[in-house]
Length: 255
Ligand SMILES: Nc1ncnc2c1ncn2[C@@H]1O[C@H](COP(=O)(O)OP(=O)(O)O)[C@@H](O)[C@H]1O
Ligand SMILES: [Mg+2]
Image 1 (cartoon, helix red, strand yellow):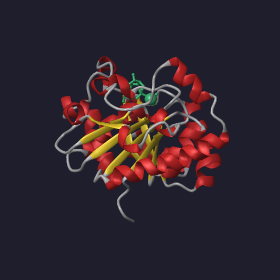
Image 2 (tube, rainbow, N blue to C red):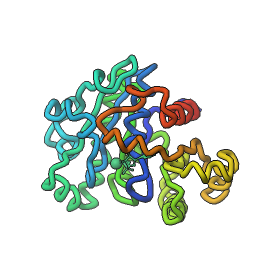
Image 3 (spheres, protein in one colour):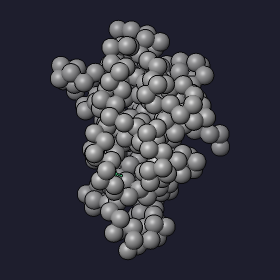
Image 4 (cartoon, helix red, strand yellow):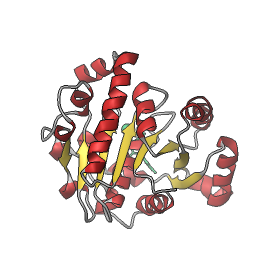
């Protein structure tokens, strides 16, 4: 199989670590190739915090999907903030309450046009020599997340150790991913160190694989100091030795 270039990061529940994984993976990819991260979580945008320097430098992805601007107007250069060598681009979701409300009110017809436009945006980026496009999504089964999964070569589904999360992820895989036939892999995140120590990381991953019927590409422990960064820094750039980064580098190798 050829290397996946478009990777969507999805989850059943919110707060599993999608956004932080999306930004850090993009930075890791940028060590070798030009990369881009897109915020498609229109319900709870978050990349504008990490990429606050890029706010106002390009149009929102919302405007692009609404056919108010062109693909080339949506991404801005974030090399200085996020790169480990090559160029990094970012496309942001509009975090205003009005924009969030507007996106919540979109109907199925609009979402079908949006899927086509998202596809064109990704094609535009890949034609611009961007090798990796990472898409951050909304949790659960929403059109925008399904659209992201449909345009992706691979979906990383992030889940925590929480039973309601694992249970919901299992249902989501059955009801959504088996229908759209996208290849998915599982990342366990924020796993208590105690659980990893008691089970062994490999055995723990195996248990989850058996339960979800999908490959587990990483078991990332919970590290409280990640919260302390308040999203202002990208650990893959500022603290490359951090265990969170080491786990993501390992995942980047596997996908
Ligand atoms: N491995 C981890 N250990 C500790 N905190 C984490 C870890 N991964 C993510 N977090 C924290 O969890 C919160 C949710 O992460 P975020 O990336 O916003 O999730 P999502 O995008 O899925 O809602 C953030 O405060 C983040 O710093
Ligand atoms: Mg998020």
